[in-house]
Image 1 (cartoon, one colour):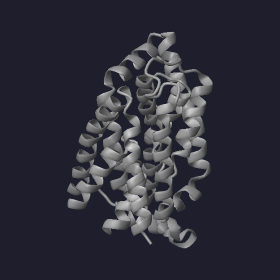
Image 2 (cartoon, one colour):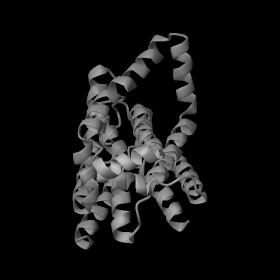
Image 3 (cartoon, rainbow, N blue to C red):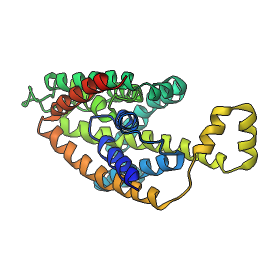
Image 4 (cartoon, helix red, strand yellow):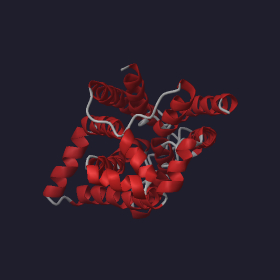
Length: 283
């Protein structure tokens, strides 16, 4: 139960704060000796954080839904940008799936990636709409900015590279308004996080078929082991999901306040410390 709470806490906070949830889960496993969460547990943790996005941005999301129904040009364009940003993310996530997954077994590489994220956050204050340029209101999102931000989100599949940190920084460098950058970053995460969770659900469903598991045992030992590690619904799973949901809401509201106040780069100090300490203590 304690491990479920810790994993839910890490997922809820680190999924949205610019400190990399995947990186923290890798380091948490290495430093605290935590076991793999299990396929279904991982699905539900992501479901908890995904639900927190819908709660925090419920008015914005509802406005976009109604705008699409009413064929409002501005809302249709907004949804189009999110879809456009999702294309390069999906291409990177699916096309480089195996190389990316191998990085989860390399904690020192994760620490190095955290240092990259820290540097990116720190220099973002000098971006066109960074805290060093408080007078700049920013430019509007367009198709090429959406594609570029989606490309950055795809690169953030690397554990240790923060999805929110890299995408918000990318938009700040492009001159996008800070508040809008924060909102767009989390709205564009809905298809990314939801798509990843959907792929895990499909895997989990396949693992419930004894014939499929038997075939994996002969043809693909790695998939067979993944099925063996897949868990079902447990009280611990529900606790982890609820914790991820609650702390996801807290993290979202906290980060949006930091972004709007121009204090986004403050998180770089934590990541520098975490990355350096990780390199020191992880062999």
